[in-house]
Image 1 (cartoon, one colour):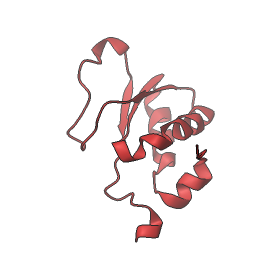
Image 2 (spheres, one colour):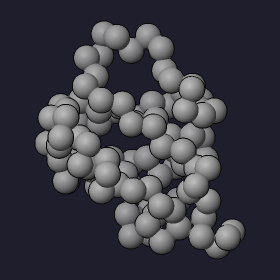
Image 3 (spheres, one colour):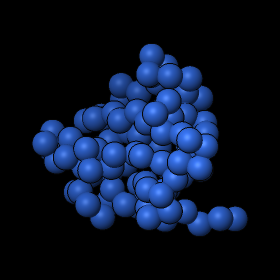
Length: 98
């Protein structure tokens, strides 16, 4: 199985993780839910590892299907999530496809 690093991800996709880090710190979030479209879920653990190094938050990965920004998870009220970040791939196509 291929091990993805942030450097490799940044060479393939523009995830703008600096903005994520900034928002997590600005909102003082302690528990953050990350939602990825199915095509980016394979990179989720590498993203979480990176974000955990840069912030004091804990991260959950939503594993349900995601078909766009309007497809937000329901039934998460009891998890006490402080912030939810959705990743998409409309503008995140691999650079080799451009």
